[in-house]
Length: 403
Image: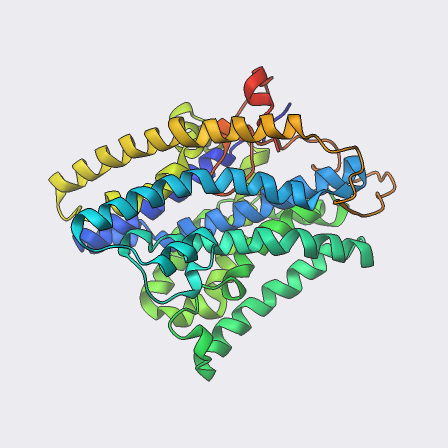
């Protein structure tokens, strides 16, 4: 079973950017804030989620002619909920010990993934807004994908583009019209951030098609422009214009650049950047990035100077390792065993079926049999993926943890 090269490196970069931003905010270090532009980290996570989930769904459809949506929901739940619930349990315990208990409505908003719609809650859960956006996307996107493919098999890229164009309109419109449901939350809701997720969906849906490949070959000659725009141009414009840049075109252009960078890294593992993204230390950080993301807000809260920052990173490393090895991996192995016990029939009634495509000369990586499994030790924050520099056979227990 093959794994997509370079993508754990993208996740490692994303989590470094997020942690760097939060530590810069705690220490009030303007230089660090300029280097670690945390919105780029969140955008990378969003784009990568859209790319991998769409590739998985298209691969399943290409192989079986159907998309088992209930099975997809089950895999996502077992992937996301156990580490989140473990973290939430610790947060509740800390709240009781410190005399600042976490409200029941806050707990429910986190567990059922609508915390990004709430205006209150404890600081220890403030980062779960992005997790809520991803889970809302996971709930809706498979349904939309199947619906679009039933109507027009070639309409998926057009649907992605249309929704991407709509996102900045909603952001700017909500800000100018003072829509109450967007008040001070223009960048925290799914409709306003769906362009990042859909940029990944778009690339997954067009990769391998002749017209896109011709465009990609021309753009690949200037691949360096993507990281320059992402990590230099866009942060500079954001520092100068703030929300006027991000809400209009900033988020969307960042998403397009991130999608191109993800695809380029997956195809250029021999390049210096490709080898770096596949370095063992980098991929290890990417593999554990979901657990790191869950604990980083709590860990960096009091990182106000060099000494406390070092202590915060040490605590984060310990907490993330405990979460990954004691909760995340075992829950994925259990998920897989349960799927083996209750394996559905080849064409279950709960599946939403779409007629398979006719064989074509050009197909996407997903449709051409390029494997994107989800072994437990190669997962992130809510994203199904495999990412390593060498295709290899999974060991038996972990080969089962694919989805």
